[in-house]
Amino acid sequence: MSDWLDAILAHDDSIPAALVTIVTAVGSTPREVGARMIVYADGRFVGTIGGGCGEAEVRQAALDVIDTGKARLVKVDLRGFYGDDQEVCGGRIEVLVEPLGVPVP
Image (cartoon, rainbow, N blue to C red; front, side, top):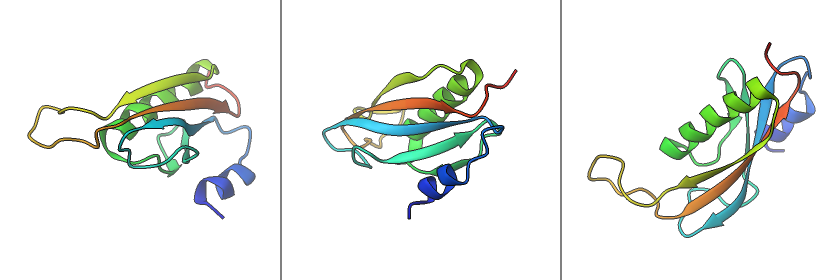
């Protein structure tokens, strides 16, 4: 089984978390549609949607979703440069971030 699926099956709803799922992938991306991860309110995470700056952006969005309790769609552009000479993947992803458990007060 996948690490994220094991974590979901064992999830305690009293622990705030968010489920992150890639729902659209266009061009070159590190992971495919359906890739998932779980982000916990304390910053821990299980699984990956590809790593790097894009995943960091989505992890921050997941913390916001945990705080608000409201799902959101996050668009991540992996084209261009991030202030250095290294080009990133070149594609784009859309990620659905859904709350799990109870929101943090």
